[in-house]
Image (cartoon, rainbow, N blue to C red; front, side, top):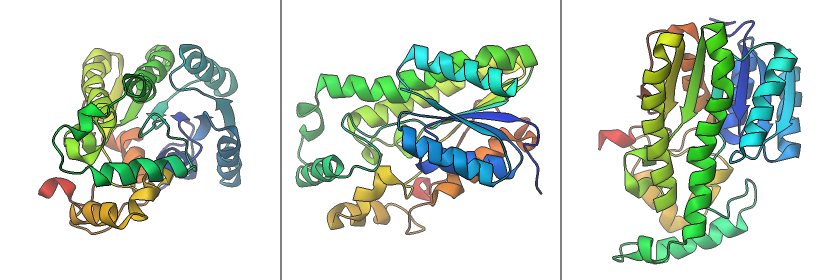
Length: 276
Protein backbone atom coordinates (compact mmCIF):
# COMPACT_ATOMS: atom_id res chain seq x y z
CA UNK A 1 0.00 0.00 0.00
CA UNK A 2 1.24 3.50 -0.81
CA UNK A 3 -0.06 7.04 -0.67
CA UNK A 4 -1.51 6.63 2.81
CA UNK A 5 -0.88 10.30 3.60
CA UNK A 6 -1.46 11.71 0.12
CA UNK A 7 -2.43 15.37 0.21
CA UNK A 8 -1.78 15.79 3.93
CA UNK A 9 0.59 18.00 5.87
CA UNK A 10 2.61 16.76 8.85
CA UNK A 11 4.43 18.84 11.45
CA UNK A 12 7.31 16.96 13.06
CA UNK A 13 9.17 18.44 16.00
CA UNK A 14 12.67 17.09 16.46
CA UNK A 15 12.68 16.36 12.74
CA UNK A 16 16.39 16.98 12.29
CA UNK A 17 17.54 13.48 13.23
CA UNK A 18 16.63 10.15 14.79
CA UNK A 19 12.99 9.17 15.14
CA UNK A 20 11.80 12.60 14.02
CA UNK A 21 13.76 12.50 10.76
CA UNK A 22 12.63 8.92 10.10
CA UNK A 23 9.00 10.04 10.50
CA UNK A 24 9.54 12.93 8.08
CA UNK A 25 10.96 10.65 5.42
CA UNK A 26 8.47 7.83 5.91
CA UNK A 27 5.53 10.25 5.78
CA UNK A 28 6.93 11.89 2.64
CA UNK A 29 7.19 8.48 0.97
CA UNK A 30 3.46 8.10 1.65
CA UNK A 31 2.53 11.45 0.10
CA UNK A 32 2.72 14.02 2.92
CA UNK A 33 4.28 17.47 2.80
CA UNK A 34 6.37 18.14 5.90
CA UNK A 35 7.18 21.00 8.21
CA UNK A 36 10.45 20.04 9.91
CA UNK A 37 10.97 21.74 13.27
CA UNK A 38 14.19 21.42 15.24
CA UNK A 39 16.54 23.39 17.44
CA UNK A 40 19.47 22.30 15.21
CA UNK A 41 19.26 24.26 11.97
CA UNK A 42 21.68 22.31 9.79
CA UNK A 43 20.26 18.83 10.46
CA UNK A 44 16.76 20.25 10.03
CA UNK A 45 17.69 21.69 6.64
CA UNK A 46 19.20 18.33 5.67
CA UNK A 47 15.90 16.61 6.46
CA UNK A 48 14.08 19.13 4.27
CA UNK A 49 16.40 18.24 1.39
CA UNK A 50 15.78 14.52 1.94
CA UNK A 51 12.02 15.05 1.92
CA UNK A 52 12.25 16.98 -1.36
CA UNK A 53 14.31 14.17 -2.85
CA UNK A 54 11.25 12.00 -2.22
CA UNK A 55 9.10 14.32 -4.28
CA UNK A 56 7.30 16.20 -1.51
CA UNK A 57 7.36 19.79 -0.32
CA UNK A 58 9.08 20.66 2.95
CA UNK A 59 9.85 23.65 5.12
CA UNK A 60 12.24 24.03 8.05
CA UNK A 61 11.38 26.19 11.06
CA UNK A 62 13.74 26.67 14.00
CA UNK A 63 12.19 25.40 17.22
CA UNK A 64 13.15 25.49 20.86
CA UNK A 65 10.59 22.93 22.03
CA UNK A 66 10.22 24.64 25.40
CA UNK A 67 9.28 28.00 23.82
CA UNK A 68 5.61 28.89 23.44
CA UNK A 69 6.48 31.53 20.85
CA UNK A 70 8.49 29.09 18.75
CA UNK A 71 5.75 26.46 18.81
CA UNK A 72 3.12 28.99 17.78
CA UNK A 73 5.39 30.11 14.94
CA UNK A 74 5.76 26.51 13.75
CA UNK A 75 1.99 26.06 13.57
CA UNK A 76 1.47 29.42 11.88
CA UNK A 77 4.08 28.74 9.21
CA UNK A 78 2.68 25.27 8.54
CA UNK A 79 -0.77 26.74 7.89
CA UNK A 80 0.62 29.64 5.84
CA UNK A 81 2.75 27.38 3.62
CA UNK A 82 0.57 24.27 3.33
CA UNK A 83 -2.91 25.49 4.26
CA UNK A 84 -3.58 22.99 7.03
CA UNK A 85 -2.12 20.66 9.65
CA UNK A 86 -3.25 17.05 9.43
CA UNK A 87 -0.61 15.28 11.51
CA UNK A 88 1.61 16.30 14.40
CA UNK A 89 4.50 14.20 15.72
CA UNK A 90 6.18 15.49 18.88
CA UNK A 91 9.58 13.84 18.57
CA UNK A 92 11.67 16.66 20.08
CA UNK A 93 13.27 15.43 23.28
CA UNK A 94 16.39 15.18 25.40
CA UNK A 95 17.66 12.40 27.65
CA UNK A 96 19.36 14.72 30.16
CA UNK A 97 19.87 18.44 30.66
CA UNK A 98 23.21 18.56 28.84
CA UNK A 99 22.07 16.56 25.83
CA UNK A 100 22.85 17.90 22.35
CA UNK A 101 22.24 15.51 19.47
CA UNK A 102 25.48 14.34 17.91
CA UNK A 103 27.73 15.49 20.76
CA UNK A 104 28.71 12.42 22.72
CA UNK A 105 31.27 13.71 25.24
CA UNK A 106 28.71 14.72 27.87
CA UNK A 107 26.70 11.55 27.24
CA UNK A 108 29.78 9.39 27.75
CA UNK A 109 30.68 11.05 31.05
CA UNK A 110 27.12 10.80 32.34
CA UNK A 111 26.71 7.16 31.34
CA UNK A 112 30.07 6.15 32.84
CA UNK A 113 29.21 7.84 36.12
CA UNK A 114 25.73 6.30 36.22
CA UNK A 115 27.14 2.85 35.51
CA UNK A 116 29.67 3.23 38.34
CA UNK A 117 26.85 4.02 40.80
CA UNK A 118 24.47 1.33 39.57
CA UNK A 119 22.71 -0.41 42.44
CA UNK A 120 23.74 2.07 45.14
CA UNK A 121 20.74 3.20 47.24
CA UNK A 122 19.92 6.86 46.69
CA UNK A 123 22.30 7.25 43.76
CA UNK A 124 19.56 8.54 41.49
CA UNK A 125 18.01 11.16 43.77
CA UNK A 126 21.05 12.45 45.67
CA UNK A 127 22.84 13.53 42.52
CA UNK A 128 19.74 14.96 40.88
CA UNK A 129 20.10 18.67 40.05
CA UNK A 130 16.80 20.63 40.15
CA UNK A 131 17.79 22.83 37.20
CA UNK A 132 18.55 19.77 35.10
CA UNK A 133 15.26 18.19 36.15
CA UNK A 134 13.35 21.29 35.04
CA UNK A 135 15.10 21.46 31.68
CA UNK A 136 14.27 17.86 30.78
CA UNK A 137 10.61 18.33 31.74
CA UNK A 138 10.48 21.67 29.92
CA UNK A 139 11.61 20.08 26.65
CA UNK A 140 10.02 16.64 26.82
CA UNK A 141 6.73 17.28 28.61
CA UNK A 142 5.97 20.99 28.37
CA UNK A 143 7.31 20.96 24.81
CA UNK A 144 4.81 18.26 23.89
CA UNK A 145 2.00 20.30 25.40
CA UNK A 146 3.07 23.49 23.64
CA UNK A 147 3.32 21.83 20.23
CA UNK A 148 -0.13 20.28 20.52
CA UNK A 149 -1.66 23.47 21.92
CA UNK A 150 -0.35 25.38 18.90
CA UNK A 151 -1.51 22.88 16.27
CA UNK A 152 -4.85 21.76 17.70
CA UNK A 153 -6.93 24.83 16.66
CA UNK A 154 -6.28 24.20 12.97
CA UNK A 155 -7.05 20.50 13.32
CA UNK A 156 -10.33 21.27 15.08
CA UNK A 157 -11.27 23.77 12.41
CA UNK A 158 -10.73 21.02 9.83
CA UNK A 159 -12.65 18.50 11.92
CA UNK A 160 -9.88 15.96 11.62
CA UNK A 161 -6.30 15.29 12.69
CA UNK A 162 -3.86 12.84 14.21
CA UNK A 163 -1.45 13.71 17.00
CA UNK A 164 1.35 11.27 17.79
CA UNK A 165 3.38 11.88 20.92
CA UNK A 166 6.70 10.15 21.49
CA UNK A 167 6.85 8.64 24.96
CA UNK A 168 9.18 5.75 25.89
CA UNK A 169 9.32 2.40 27.61
CA UNK A 170 10.63 4.55 30.46
CA UNK A 171 7.10 5.95 30.83
CA UNK A 172 6.17 2.70 32.59
CA UNK A 173 9.46 1.15 33.70
CA UNK A 174 11.77 3.51 35.66
CA UNK A 175 14.95 1.54 35.07
CA UNK A 176 14.73 2.39 31.37
CA UNK A 177 15.89 5.98 31.92
CA UNK A 178 17.14 8.61 34.40
CA UNK A 179 14.66 10.15 36.86
CA UNK A 180 13.77 13.27 34.89
CA UNK A 181 13.57 11.45 31.57
CA UNK A 182 11.32 8.69 32.93
CA UNK A 183 9.03 11.16 34.70
CA UNK A 184 8.80 13.38 31.62
CA UNK A 185 7.82 10.43 29.44
CA UNK A 186 5.29 9.15 31.98
CA UNK A 187 3.84 12.65 31.84
CA UNK A 188 3.71 12.53 28.05
CA UNK A 189 1.72 9.31 28.25
CA UNK A 190 -0.82 10.72 30.74
CA UNK A 191 -1.03 13.93 28.71
CA UNK A 192 -1.78 11.82 25.62
CA UNK A 193 -4.69 10.08 27.31
CA UNK A 194 -6.09 13.34 28.71
CA UNK A 195 -5.80 15.07 25.34
CA UNK A 196 -7.41 12.14 23.55
CA UNK A 197 -10.51 12.45 25.73
CA UNK A 198 -10.59 16.21 25.20
CA UNK A 199 -10.36 16.10 21.39
CA UNK A 200 -12.22 12.91 20.42
CA UNK A 201 -15.53 14.58 19.63
CA UNK A 202 -13.70 17.16 17.52
CA UNK A 203 -12.40 14.47 15.17
CA UNK A 204 -8.80 14.65 16.38
CA UNK A 205 -7.14 11.43 17.47
CA UNK A 206 -4.23 11.40 19.93
CA UNK A 207 -1.95 8.41 20.44
CA UNK A 208 1.53 7.76 21.79
CA UNK A 209 4.46 5.61 20.79
CA UNK A 210 6.65 4.25 23.57
CA UNK A 211 9.80 3.06 21.79
CA UNK A 212 12.33 0.75 23.34
CA UNK A 213 16.03 1.26 22.69
CA UNK A 214 16.49 2.83 19.25
CA UNK A 215 19.73 3.31 17.32
CA UNK A 216 19.87 7.12 17.37
CA UNK A 217 22.29 9.79 18.56
CA UNK A 218 20.54 9.70 21.93
CA UNK A 219 21.37 6.05 22.56
CA UNK A 220 24.73 5.87 20.80
CA UNK A 221 26.68 5.84 24.05
CA UNK A 222 24.70 2.83 25.30
CA UNK A 223 26.42 0.75 22.66
CA UNK A 224 29.90 2.14 23.34
CA UNK A 225 30.12 1.36 27.07
CA UNK A 226 30.34 -2.40 27.50
CA UNK A 227 28.60 -2.58 30.87
CA UNK A 228 25.68 -0.45 29.69
CA UNK A 229 25.43 -2.23 26.34
CA UNK A 230 25.20 -5.59 28.08
CA UNK A 231 22.44 -4.38 30.41
CA UNK A 232 20.49 -2.89 27.50
CA UNK A 233 20.67 -5.93 25.24
CA UNK A 234 19.84 -8.33 28.06
CA UNK A 235 16.58 -6.46 28.59
CA UNK A 236 15.52 -6.83 24.93
CA UNK A 237 14.44 -10.35 23.93
CA UNK A 238 15.12 -9.59 20.26
CA UNK A 239 18.69 -8.76 21.25
CA UNK A 240 19.10 -5.56 19.25
CA UNK A 241 18.04 -1.91 19.25
CA UNK A 242 15.38 -0.73 16.80
CA UNK A 243 16.16 1.24 13.68
CA UNK A 244 14.45 4.65 13.58
CA UNK A 245 12.34 3.63 10.57
CA UNK A 246 10.78 0.88 12.68
CA UNK A 247 9.38 3.54 14.98
CA UNK A 248 8.39 5.71 12.02
CA UNK A 249 6.37 2.80 10.62
CA UNK A 250 4.34 2.73 13.84
CA UNK A 251 3.86 6.50 13.57
CA UNK A 252 2.72 6.09 9.95
CA UNK A 253 0.02 3.65 11.08
CA UNK A 254 -1.21 6.13 13.70
CA UNK A 255 -1.09 9.02 11.24
CA UNK A 256 -3.07 7.18 8.58
CA UNK A 257 -6.74 6.24 8.32
CA UNK A 258 -5.78 2.64 9.08
CA UNK A 259 -5.83 3.61 12.76
CA UNK A 260 -9.15 5.48 12.52
CA UNK A 261 -10.56 3.86 15.69
CA UNK A 262 -7.39 4.38 17.76
CA UNK A 263 -7.23 7.20 20.28
CA UNK A 264 -5.71 7.42 23.74
CA UNK A 265 -3.52 4.39 23.06
CA UNK A 266 0.22 3.73 23.28
CA UNK A 267 2.12 1.40 20.97
CA UNK A 268 5.39 -0.14 22.14
CA UNK A 269 7.84 -1.07 19.37
CA UNK A 270 10.32 -2.39 21.92
CA UNK A 271 11.73 -5.72 20.71
CA UNK A 272 9.85 -7.60 23.42
CA UNK A 273 10.97 -5.44 26.38
CA UNK A 274 7.56 -5.72 28.04
CA UNK A 275 7.37 -9.51 27.74
CA UNK A 276 9.58 -9.82 30.81
